[in-house]
Amino acid sequence: MFEVSMFQIFVIFMIILYIIKRPRIGKNEPPFVPYTIPILGHTYNYLFNPKKFIKECKEQYGDCFSIYVFGHVMTVVSRDSLTEVFRNSDDFDFSSAINELLPFHRLFTYNGGITKETNIFHAKTAREQVSGKLALNTNIVQKYLMKGMDKCIGDCNDPKIVDNTWLTFNNIVALSITNIFAGEEAAIHEDLIKSFGSFAFDVGSLLMIPPILSFIHPKLHEIVITLPMKFGWNPVSRHREVVMNRLRPVIEKRLKEKTILGNNYKPYNDLLEYYMNQPNFDYTIPDNLSYHVENLLVLVFASINTTSRTVVDALYDLAGRPEVLNELYEEALTINKECNGTITILEIQKMEKLDSFIKESLRHSDNILALPHYMISKSYTFSNGYTILRGRKVLMCADDMLKAKECYGDDAEEFKPFRFVNAKSPATKIDRSYIVFGGGRHACPGRFFAITETKLLLHKLIMKYKFSTKSGKIEKKIYIGPITIPSQSSLVFENRVKC
Ligand code: HEM
Image 1 (spheres, rainbow, N blue to C red):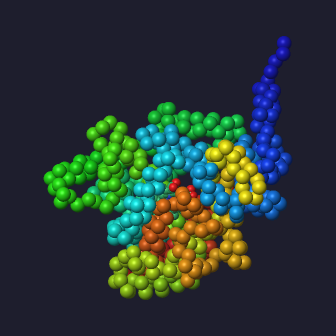
Image 2: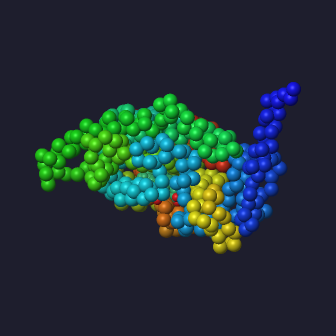
Image 3: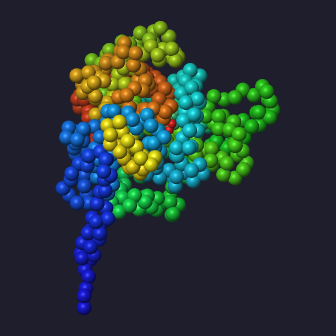
């Protein structure tokens, strides 16, 4: 009798997998980097040795090459070919690549998640209602950043050690953003602020599941990570319920006000008011409020933890450089004297050294590969002559582009805090190499708000505290594969003026 052991089944499975998943490269595709381990391809180097691996590939194959990771061929682009991806947004799509990592179309059950089409609305909202209302909202942002600072860091007459830095500053940013998104009335509720603050972390936790099953098919990975939804666990719905509970009474109150006051009704400046003014808003219709709340949550996802990440990276970069902190304190002091402590958008524009410092910190975000895009046209031929076909995933060499010598000079690798002072190059200005906010037609529309909020919070922190790393050294970021997260080490805060 012929018996088949588990081991034999495994071997047969691996052979089949090897045969069907052998990388297939078109005739004129960017050069394929050879690998030695079958099936795994370049996955090990991608996860555990990305900096050296990508540098060596670039040196050998140029700015455009193909690698094989998690069972898929991906095109890696830098310099001119990277710029082409941004310029040709009809051919390259960011949202479908993001949906593969985080299946928003399954998590957001009422608004369909984040797609190329729905992003038009979200981008317009961010551009006109958030970045576009900076001057109107500076006071409110300032008020709640100060409140958040008092609550989360408080009095540091004696030096205070702050652990969980990203979480701490995320809570401060969440408080101010909840106030301008949901309005001050709703933002008095702790559970709403907590929900907004933890939303991106909760949804993003799905990224921590390694896509092992993608070796077989990416859909399998999606099925597995969304399996808990079948048993009622959905990180979006939990937060959606909290937000709806807190917004419903405010909506009812505003609608009543509108009826009583008629033309004398004074619209609020928050995002809630904007959603209420949409022609398709009618919260009495089933699912209508869920739909609008999910739209709001998309912007919560895009804004809070990206902005707090920028603040925290800048804080670590500053905490390890006391001489730079002193120089920024001098600038902050001068500006503060001129306006008696009440900062308006004009004062924020005057913070030139701080702006340069934040830009340099963003330039050193150290992500090796970022901003995945899918090629969605029939085929695309780069100006270097290489052609890729529909469905090819493209990854950008972020660090390589952000440290390009032809754009930043021979010292491009160095952290020069005041590199951009007098260079007419603010932290919000997109250009060929400064890709932290993407590029082209889909460049981040919330960047004006994010940089203003970051400047305001850092200004207030610099005015109130001296801070340093606990180790006294410049702390390095932590790599998770080719992307980074902030250092986990502690920061020490101390009041500038002791009582
Ligand atoms: C420092 C903080 C931020 C960073 C680093 C950041 C980064 C990015 C990046 C890299 C993209 C992709 C751009 C592309 O496809 O070329 C993007 C898109 C987007 N961001 Fe931001 N972002 C930040 C803050 C914000 C804020 C505060 C908002 C909302 C108020 C926002 C809303 C959006 C939206 C709606 C898009 C999609 C744009 C489109 O597809 O047309 N972001 N962001």
